[in-house]
Length: 492
Image 1: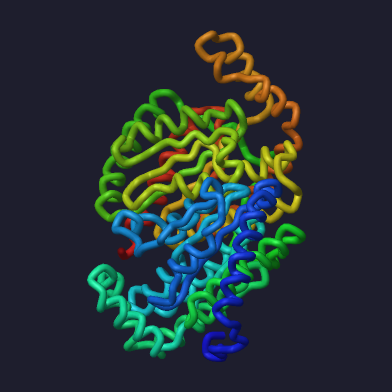
Image 2: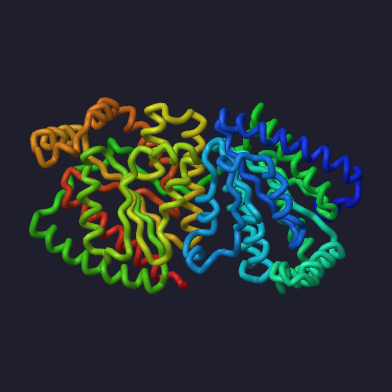
């Protein structure tokens, strides 16, 4: 790509370029209203050489745009705090809402390539990072995002001259860093890595546009032309990503109808085991914090199955400064305006901390599927997207533990009636709970498919038999203990 790029071709005069650029900016401003009407979110990623003019190009592109509907972010190297989360978290959490445009002055390419060049990523880790980026971009495109990727290209001599000019002016000298000089001195090495990255991440739904940036006005015009054409094309028909054919390493699961619910604990035995599990979990939580191991615990299950009480007992053993329980309700307006995984990426725990999700991203393949809140293509695609998401978490060093809390219809009815009759518990029962109960059979089909397709070797499902809540609570605590012990035995 870069190696075959020809500089200084098809030159127009400065006056011609300025006139065309002015007209194009006006057209881009007009497109903002269409983006709003279509609910099309746009991410414009500008990458390129140091001193290639990324900031200048963004300034040119936004000249006539309404600032209420776009945002510019200059992405710096991750801070020590940001490094305590998975690589993609800080990029996923900045994605724009429907109808908005986000301009990124460098992004995940710069971060990845520089880490590789510094030796912070091995070849194997670098290839895995490229795969994560391709998954990230494909998920965004499949979720309705338009991703426009520009690479501003200059030759080594032009870069050196620009860096010299920056360094010569006391007001701009700070913009010429030793890292920029190092890049120029090692231009060919960087060129080869840039070239490989662009080739590996150039996809029909997120193609790269290489722009000759040796002449500022012409570069700005080329960027504006590409942005205009990509938005117009997406407003007509967005390119559909090719969904890969996966063979996930699956852990076997029983159909819910075959789960033996005749399991119980005597009160005395329950109290004894609860005390023992709490003591063990408290010690493990301290070790987790010391070794900076993050943990996600997911609870899904039938209404009135006992998720809340189960979570309460688990959390009672933990240091309150190191965990958070996240009850997931219907998405807010702001959350609905973004990719469905956005609200979960933004809630992930940092290293050494535990996040307990009371319901989760699995709503996509259950309630959203059955209530028609997403299309069939959306929830069918979500099985693999969720596996990809969880694999990304596990690959980053996170422990993922998933529970399905199982009861039968008779137990649910009994508990519903108890709640209805108890003034202190009536808030727990709603009309929606009764409606969902009427759809038990349909939900059971959906849950069985969910368990079958997302119980992976790296993030398996665990069924908690919860007709006896005490049994389910102890089982959950023991499973968490075993998972944490395995994770802490791994070399850091």
